[in-house]
Image 1: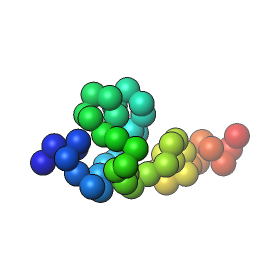
Image 2: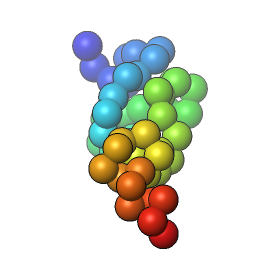
Image 3: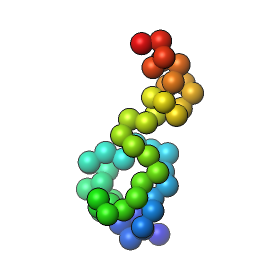
Length: 52
């Protein structure tokens, strides 16, 4: 149940370098997101992104 032990990590929070270090996530693990995806996939962020 530890993130550092998982092969695939499914999360709704942004996983930045600081989070990776704190949880032990490595580059060999798959995460269900790409950096700053919230501006596209979350409706309230998408509206702000489109207006820019």
